[in-house]
Length: 376
Image (cartoon, rainbow, N blue to C red):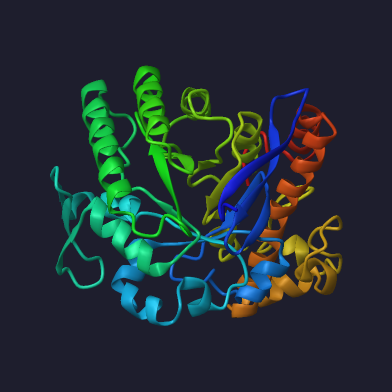
C-alpha cells in the first residue's frame, strides 16, 4: 500500500472546489487545509501540542534555516524533524530556495546552483538541487520540495522563461537525487511568473515527470490579486487531478478562499503568528487590533464563534493588558487564536464543499467580516 497519496472525496457542484484526504506516513489529513509555519522546527511561541490542538494537520519547517542550525545531521540523529520537535503528525519542508533567492544582494545564480552568503555570519554557502534534496532527506519530513528559483514581480518575459527552464532542469536533478522515494513525497514547483504559456509549459513538463504532488510558486510576491488568481488558474488547469496541489505562502482569508475555489488543497503562511505578535487578530467579526483603548474594559472573548484556548478562557481586556506589558503570553495566545481561525476556516470550507455551496460560503465569510477588502 502506498504511504503517500491524495484521495479526492468530493467536488463542489457549485464551484468546482474539491475536498479530499492526504495520506502520509505520519497520518491522514483532510484537505483543503492551512499549514502553520514552524521555520526553525517550532511555530513561534507555541508548543507542538498547542499547534495540534489548534487543528493543524501538516506543519512546515524551513530547510535553509535547519541546514544552518542545528544542521541536518543533528536532526537525522534525533530520528527526523518530527522526533526532533515532538510533533505527532505530518510535516513538510520547503527547498530553501525562497530564502536563498530573498538574499538578492548576497547571491549568484549559476546552472549548478546558487552561491550566497549566510544571513547569520556572512560565510560563503552553496545550495544546489542535489544539496537541497540531500538535506531534506536527512530532515525526514513527509513532503519535501524541489529546489526552484522564485523570481520577483514584475519580471520580463525573457527572464521568467530562462528561470522557468532552469527550474525544470533543477526539478529533474532533484528527482534523480531523491533517495527516500518510499517515505518522502517530492513535489515539483510550477513557475513562470505572470505568463500563461510559461505556466502551462512548466506544469505540463512537471506532470510528465510524475511527481507525487505539485506546488504553485512565484505568487504573493507583490502582484495584484487578479494576477495572482490567474497565476493559480494557469498552473492548476494543467496539473493531474489525482495529485495534491499546494499554493505556497498564502494565509490571508480572501486569498485562501479564492485559491480553494480554484482547486488548491494546501496552503501555508507565517501571517497568523506574525500579525499576532503585533496584536492583530483575525476574527469572525473582522480584523481586531487588541492594542486599541476600546478593549481596555472589554471583558468579552476575542471571538465569540471561536473554540480555541484563547477565546474560551481569556477576555479582550486581559489580552490587551498582556500585549501592552510585552508579556510573551500575549503573543502565544493570539497566535493560538489566529492559527485556529485559519484551520477552522479550512474546516468550514471543507464542509461547504461537501454541501455543494462553497461559493455561498465564500460570499458569507467575506461580506460579514470585511476580509474581501483586506485579507486579515
